[in-house]
Amino acid sequence: MAPAYAVLGGPMPSVISDSAHLRATARRVTLPTHARHDLTLPNGGLVREYTNPQGQVFAVSWRGPGKPDLRALLGPHFADLQTANVRQARRGPRFARMPAAVSHDDIKIQTGGHMGYFWGVAYLPAMVPAGFNMNDLQ
Image (cartoon, rainbow, N blue to C red; front, side, top):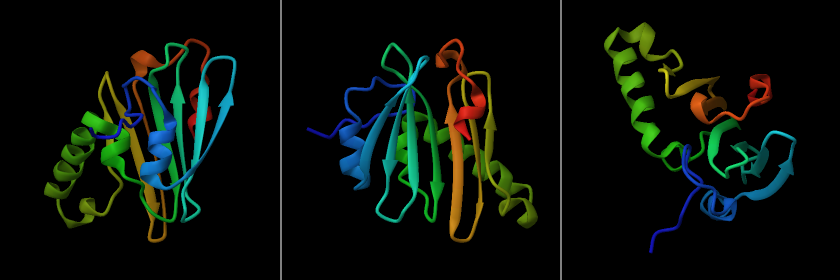
């Protein structure tokens, strides 16, 4: 049986699975509108998974010296990021080096960084709990 990861948009059975997969230490912070799960990676990077009161992962953010396993964190939405990367590369060499972004009604993804430091955020607008401050994703 494959391990269950806390995939963007999926149920949150256990952040422990993500911690093990990413070899991270986990800490949960319960806030009035949501829970935030901080995963500290071995390289010093940080992944945060945000769950709404229904236990669904509505957002994921990351920052640090390397990119985490985005395929595992974004789940089926990883394809949206790949598509954005391909479209950007087709625009020419100058655009191929720019950070990818996805902005659809159902998914928002922003990425950025430079050699040695990467960041990103992905969220599902329909699952964001009422009263959540989007600035908390930064």
